[in-house]
Length: 170
Image (tube, rainbow, N blue to C red; front, side):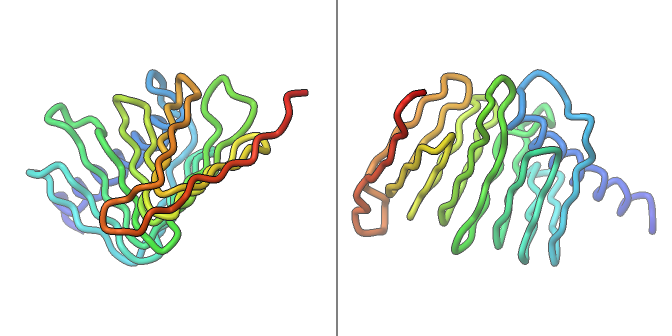
């Protein structure tokens, strides 16, 4: 394996490492190793993108991200700016720092905006946290504020009514 190939692989792994630590907390880096499974990956250093394809599974600590395809984008400073998972049922699971309940979400598209610490679940979206369940065309979860916004409309799809089940506070 030549040095150029090794640097591409290292850059791809660093992008994923930033994803795991970014979802868990914006300020720290997780000590847990990043594990990635995919059939293939393409790295474009100039564009700052890595695309994983084929039953992609990413794991770091408690964070899990799955999809048929996962795109990782970095900003001009080389930091992770956005991760997007696509698939019939893309999947995300994490336990954000300071929260006792984990979040689990599924949708046809999941976008994690790192700087905003916001997760979008788009098209047939479902989100579970602490026994509460949300469904809709589009769900947005603001991690730090623990706020969920739901909409029924999704561009290019029929309206998908919002449904939710909220557990009584104990």
